[in-house]
Image 1: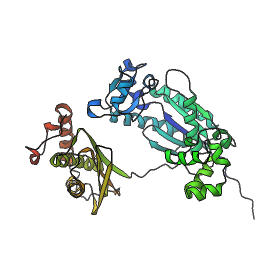
Image 2: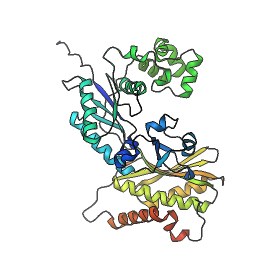
Image 3: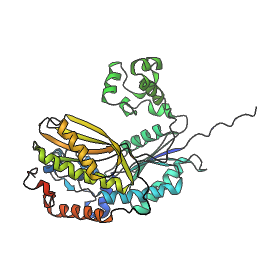
Image 4: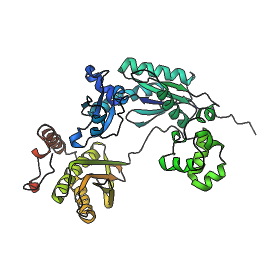
Length: 400
């Protein structure tokens, strides 16, 4: 029997665009450079920080923080409204640069991706440097990269590189973990730096005297499995730097949703239903744009105390019709809502599949799409109450 050729050592790059939304805003408005600012919603609308500049980060501001809290930490904080279309367009340009290096690109968010460059003759770290320089030269965007033999270690390497960066601006980090050094690199890091170790698991590990990734690696694997099940096996392997997951080039979209956080908590059912109708129309529009249909409609309600309730119903057949989605989610609301004040409400559609092929006689309803665009522009200019369904006339609307 002929000898088998061992598989080549993989070369994986993890790329993360530094403070991406802020970097795009600085391109749009160079006066923002060097200033403490955050991209996100206004505090009076219960907005949160989507991204913040590095000067703001040095004052304690961080993503997902309520904007009101961010302003208390940094009273001079500038608030910039998000421009998601601009971010998406710039993200596509970044991904195009990555695809010039390899077709094996796994985009995991708007500003983050893995590349498998195993088949390239060059050293992975040299390719990473070239990518970093190209993105800076062609798009004037900063980015950080981690290089390793697998996705787990490359991602953690990137995090470590960014944390070690010095200076007032973006980290522009580049961290290499050579083949064979994975376990040694991970060992001194805190246990919660490992994928799969959230606050609950970290607390359980700490109770055992496990505080670092090296502690996990040294702990008997059988005992981890006994205590944590399959998750324990993953912990043991990941702590030793073992991760065989491939870089996958396609991700199936799992859901499309819309959510609204009210300025004041809402107890008026008519207001909640009106909000759901508007959200259902936006979800349906997104489905049509992506040529998808959904089989399951979900309702999300969040109360004053942040308790969250979800309900769902499966349709008789997949749909991208706004009225079908609206009818299903309002029925869920009528069954589930207990008249308590609602802080947030949302509509989601899951069980996505490719939309049916249009026949020769079917055409997309372009007039309806133009109408949606016009309504959204009017609301943007004159407020959400400027355009309302006739069925809503005389009904109360949320304050603010």
